[in-house]
Image (tube, rainbow, N blue to C red; front, side, top):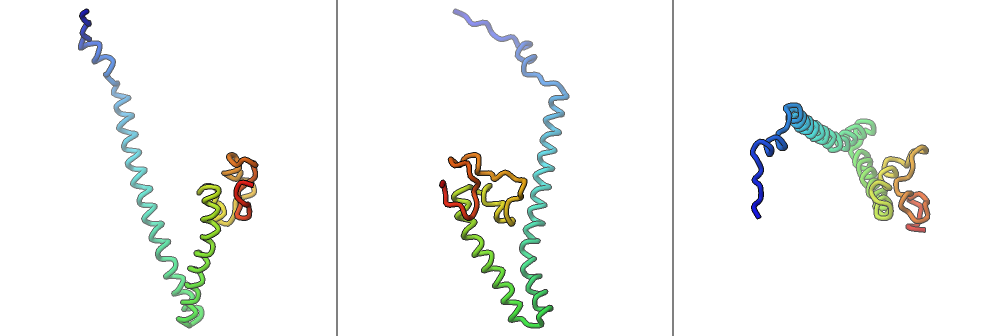
Length: 135
């Protein structure tokens, strides 16, 4: 039983891509590279902003109160507030996932939004910081 060899012409014809397809792949790669660079730059700029904000807040508090002590109290208060807010948000993230906790971290879901975890909760009720798990 001999097998018929594949002719070089037919294999080239099936593997050959048009110049438009090759150009589309190159354009897609360039677009992806440019997008990743833009996102990375935005991440760096955002991280710098997050890192600088507390320091500027302390300087502003010192200027307003004319006291280094009160400026330190303001910074300590913001740190403790963030830590205390993180505890219930972490518990909510365990129950509902990150998508369920994120709107609450930003001040609560908007009235028009559908709570992300209501679709997979057995009761169909929305996740909130006051819900008790799967009830």
